[in-house]
Image (cartoon, rainbow, N blue to C red; front, side, top):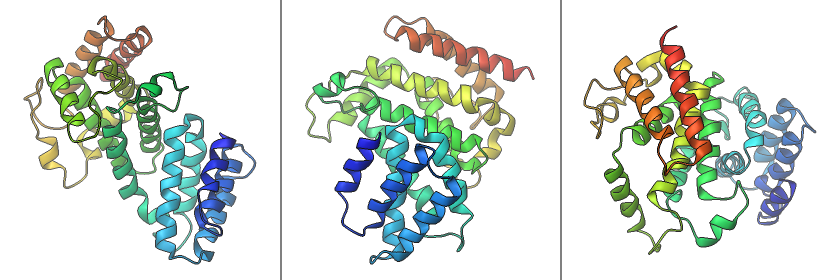
Length: 285
């Protein structure tokens, strides 16, 4: 991880806030500084930069989110850092101001990139593959939602569970091809079935880490403005929109289904079974 931060810093301009923040983040993740001290140092770097604070804040948030996608061990430290950053005036400050929009942009970007594997990606050590970044980013997102930072992040869990568990095999294959066509990729080194294992890990993590919170909160996690997105019918669900008991039961049955599928990796099948059991447990509370 230290080498990764060093490489990131070398690509930044001198006196650029992002270059300084690489060092601050490296110290934070290594427990060499506190979240409060790191937050103050980051905001000071942004404020003292020769560029606009808004531009520097944008780049710093992007660095934070690149880090959580690359290294799952950074999640807890960066969540504490985000709380500390949010508490520093003015509100919103130049870093916190961009968090929600860049998080959504990067989430969509990693969602698309998970389809596009070069042959060398399969030889790369984790967590450098597109699939592993997708998993890590989602695990960070559910941890952030569960932490109480902002319940709005639970919406990503709903969309993830819906897409993974309510899409037929044929639709997934068509969707896979659709994501390749607009790109320069004539052939991805991963296929739809292999990708499904990564998506199942993500869906299971949402349930195991944040499922109980989502179940208890129900449709209140969505806030306003999501009505059209929630009402979308899927291959396997044409019931009421949002988070209903019937939908949770469907998701539980789908986890059971995938747990026994031969094309799903054994460890992923076991995780799917854990998710099914977890749903059953929190639905009888």
